[in-house]
Image (cartoon, rainbow, N blue to C red):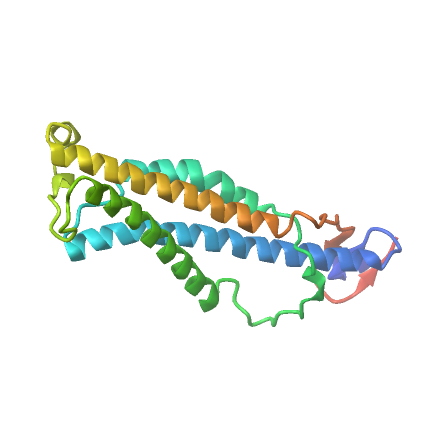
Length: 209
């Protein structure tokens, strides 16, 4: 009865298990936020090229097939790695968060917009650099060969330059995301994850074997 009524049931007589449980819970919370920030920032960098193409009438810098390659190649496995990251150093020194604090707050979305915007700007630098290297100086009046089928695109010099520019944008986006994931992973590399001996029930009581 005591175990069924308890919020926390200790598997041994060691109160240190509570500390391990709190650390593990904080680590899971932090990893979910890392995962969400990484995915949202990635989606921002995928949406902005379509908005720029519609509003500024510039060629679409990221094709649908390239987005699929990014999602399956450079987003899926790094995001899963962030979700299983080890606890960061100093995690238990942070003050407890309030119960009303949302998991996906406005700060997370602002950070995702900021990181996704930086990634998009850097990728567009590579995209327009290819056009500048091939003599295109009016970057807001580039030929819209992105509206042509791929086979017809390769039959014109404008189409070949466009393919090179989208490849540069895609490669820069791929490299930028792996760098972001690597920096996020390093923060928890030096701290080992503690396994918790606590299991959770329903109310506020303790029970020992």
